[in-house]
Amino acid sequence: MTSPSEKGAALLEVLIAVAITAMLAAAMTQVTRFGLSVIERVQTANSTSTEALIARRTLSDLLTRIDPGKADRDTAQGDRESFQWYGAAPDGDAWRTGIWRLQTTGDQSELSLCVEFGVPATCSIESTIQALGPFAYAPADGVFADVWPAGPPPHLIRIGDHVFTPRALGGR
Image 1 (cartoon, rainbow, N blue to C red):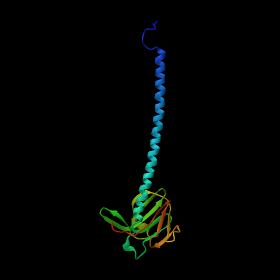
Image 2 (image 1 turned 120 degrees about the vertical axis):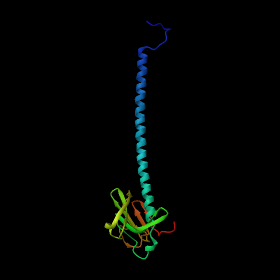
Image 3 (image 1 turned 90 degrees about the vertical axis):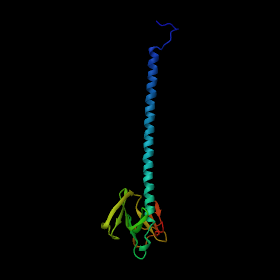
Image 4 (image 1 turned 45 degrees about the vertical axis):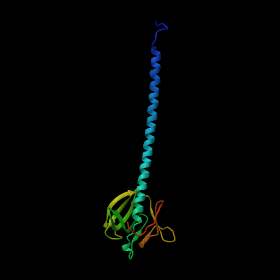
């Protein structure tokens, strides 16, 4: 038998300490799992937001650069799924001009460079970006329509909830 003056822990005290430690470890594991799932959801949302921002900026850059050398003929045409225009894109220290076509297919848009205006079969895909929605076009009166006949570019282009203003390419 032990006397009250002896120091040490009884078996019951050790078991209680082990049980409390196990419960704390289990609770910390659950908290860590929850925290990691929150971080994963935030990163996914940020990634989606970043992709949408990059898509909007890419479209803004391309749709706001109409080639002024083509102003004397048809420079743009479009419908709900695609828009085609004589435009320019930065290419190093110069501009790469040509017939550009942006077509929405499902959840992405394909940007193509074409040989002939109005002939999709002559287009080769340059890149893909996240789709932002269907296209709509507005002349000077600001009334949007689903189709833009071949001619000068519209005053406004709406893609989903985003509105772009095409303009002739200026100096860089």
